[in-house]
Length: 354
Image 1: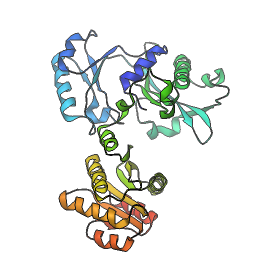
Image 2: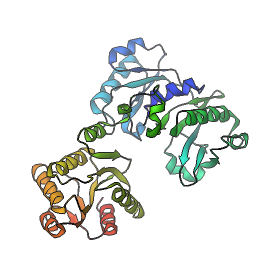
Image 3: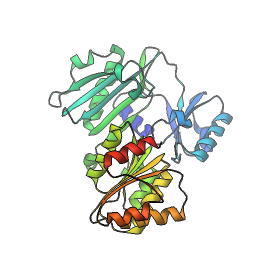
Image 4: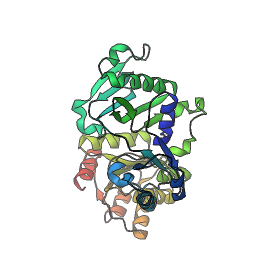
């Protein structure tokens, strides 16, 4: 379960991690209640990455400017997400910015602390500058771990690790960790709690808070649907095949975005609903990887063709379909999709047509 920034910062405060003074508003009239002096930092509360570049974080020098920004964020949304709440924070001076996070490293079966002397950027872009320190779960965070990061960040690291453990987090991240007048402050908060442990934390927000509008729509239609940061939408059947498809894209330097699992359906309408979700997700290309068993190939093909006849979609569609009624499905799809005979070929074509 992902928490919105303001929810994460409420947790931070309860663990002694300083955050900028801020208040959450839902309507323009609420600006009258803001006690912090101008200028304000207005931050759309949405669960998407790259929020700042998408216009989800702006500075207002006056109440009038804040109201204009509020209207823009609510009307336009951020990266397809509707903005229902805006966090209004004090603008603080920045001397330095760090990156700090703890997450579960499943390959090493340990916790991993990551620290970088550059914060406020996409950490993937400066991966070579990131320090990685493994933390044995049986021993926990020790002073020798902390000595590898600047003195001014150690107290927050200690408290963040305690939060990470006690709230059963998969990820606890501060980016940027701001140093202002010698004081360390969490400029942002990203918290992901293990869904399997939610029952132990009644104090945390309701699960549905984490879901994007498309994820909620998918859940209502009983379709397994996950949004990642990439630009290639994947439709497959079965979790294993879906994950294999994402791995294949990665091999060809492609990045999976939305992925959708049709499961064991043999329902044309379900296929059309899946395509409707994918169209709304606005991916650059759609990759279909289907192994027809319970889900027959011709049923999927019929759903795809009917959807494309009813709706014009701008994205190219690459399809690799194997299994029951495979040949019939290929005939039905030949005028609508780019066909491929293997998973590798399909992944390569999907990356190439972007």
